[in-house]
Structures are given as C-alpha cells and as structure tokens.
Amino acid sequence: MKTLSLKLDDDIFEEAEDIRSKLHLARNRYINEAVSIYNRVNKKRLLKKQLAKESLLTSKDSLEILHEFEKLVDEN
Image (cartoon, rainbow, N blue to C red):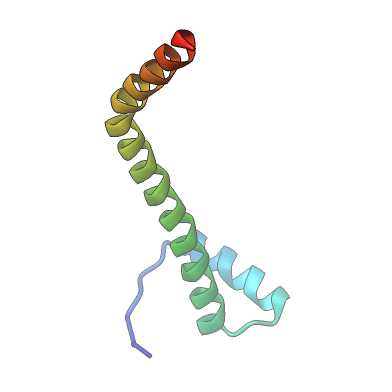
C-alpha cells in the first residue's frame, strides 16, 4: 500500500465524512472505493474516446469495402 497526503475542499470532506459514517466505513476504505470507482469511469471514457478515434480512421475503408460488396451483389 502507498501512503499519500490529500487535501480536500472542506465541503467535499464534510460530505464524504457524513456518507462514510452512515455506511460505517473507515475513511481509508471509503476513499479507496471512491478512487476505484473513479478509475473505472475514466477507463470507460478513455476507451470510448479511443474507439471513436479508431472508428473514424477505419470508416473510409469500411465504406469502400461496402461499395465493393454492393457491386459484387449487383453483378450477380
């Protein structure tokens, strides 16, 4: 485990303290779970961005291939 120093805005800290106390979680556990969830959200965002970029790169080729298949179907 890594140790870190963290500065939170007062309102964020108070809200987190209120919620974690109602959940009966240690502060460390609560923050670990929060960061884990945030990591998953951002991994999905990055994947979505990467897929959009790669889709854009291949869209022209995909359309050309589709037109070639349509020509083959029309010929038969």
